[in-house]
Amino acid sequence: MSGLNLNPIDTSRDQYFDYGDYISRRHGDRYYNLGYAIYKGIVLQPTEIGYIDPTTTINGVGVIETAFTNFTIALLFKKQDEDAKKKRDNLCDFFGPNGTIQANLITQAQINIWISKARTTFRNCKCL
Image 1 (tube, rainbow, N blue to C red):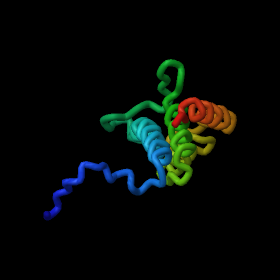
Image 2 (cartoon, rainbow, N blue to C red; image 1 turned 60 degrees about the horizontal axis):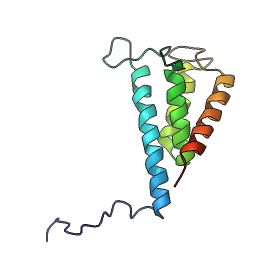
Image 3 (cartoon, rainbow, N blue to C red; image 1 turned 30 degrees about the vertical axis):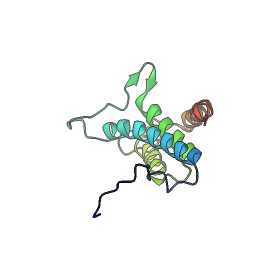
Image 4 (cartoon, helix red, strand yellow; image 1 turned 180 degrees about the horizontal axis):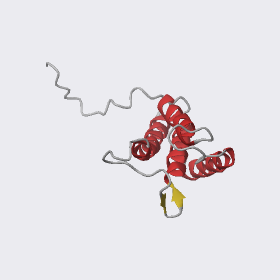
């Protein structure tokens, strides 16, 4: 049988140690994707389609805060997630005190609050 997998058992989870690890990584991927959707929009040029103004707030929460928090939650689920770590660091480089896109949108005090919120969200949704 060339290339046909007639085995009905899902083998995509074979790479994980156990089901809890699979679920944890899947949750991490979801939070990464949420953060990346915003990240992609705020790093675009204002003339490009899909641009999101970094100062935009949705329901009283800034888009930078949302992206940063989602990347942090992804890191809490998947500690070795290099993409989430890099994107979160990029947010600080782009919007921090010496930001290359727009300076002073992120401060250390805000980062501490956002990490605290991410930990709270992680504790509340980590139920396997």
